Image: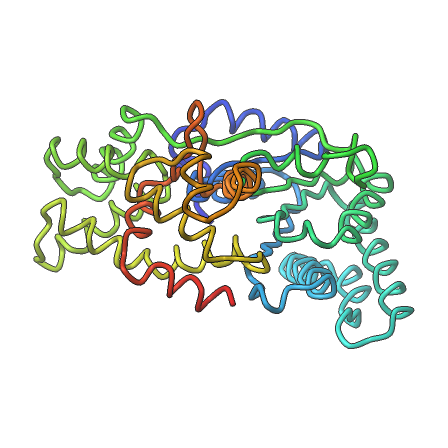
Length: 358
């Protein structure tokens, strides 16, 4: 994990997240993918005198993700932390727990044992549980009922940070008073892409650290074309330096082309994951393709493209908006990430996404 001192920018967010973790708050960090959520939160947690536990829902293939798999991942994360820290008592409490292939009664007992293990861990020191890509759990209300019970038992000795690559995770988790986490989540910190000036500073700082001289023109053009996403800026900088060391062509088009070639498969998987289980995936992909080609799309244009009434088209657009694939500017919708937009223009985009989603 990157040292906190190496995490560029986000000074206000660093102070806020540190305060919330130390206070035992349950809070949300939202933002589009590659805005730096995971790196920022994990780096802060590792820098504090806390016991950090990290669970990433995207580590499980989407076709295998289930409530039992989630609990198994949580158990494994707790076991890993306690083993690494030599906390044998907690490790003994959970190492025989299993949520896979056992009876309902055994699963209930396993959850009780998990709660007792976390309670014991919290008596040793404050715990911060980081749950990444939480939107993957939205179809499993039982997971959030368990978390709500943990809140009532362990807060503020245990802080929970919910990370989500959607527009506003807090709004989704507290959509209605009947939702388990309603009233239990405090702040929501939303990370946004950098502006052009900050993107330039990040690239300059990165190249200086690597001892590589890069023209101002390349840095400015790269900052513009990558949309201010820290993840893409980092990827570009690493690709440029490696290509320079290998004596390859480091013109901007060539470096970004190389970077996007590597990123394409990852983006196909991300879009497929966002659309997994949705009916009429082709309609979502046609909307994305049109927005990529034209730069934006309106409700009426979306309705025409998918052959539905405007109210149905709004449902499709809202879903893409909520999942962080699009953003709304006035009454138009755009693909939020410029790299995703360029990948969506590839001839094999629809085929590659469907192959992963169906």
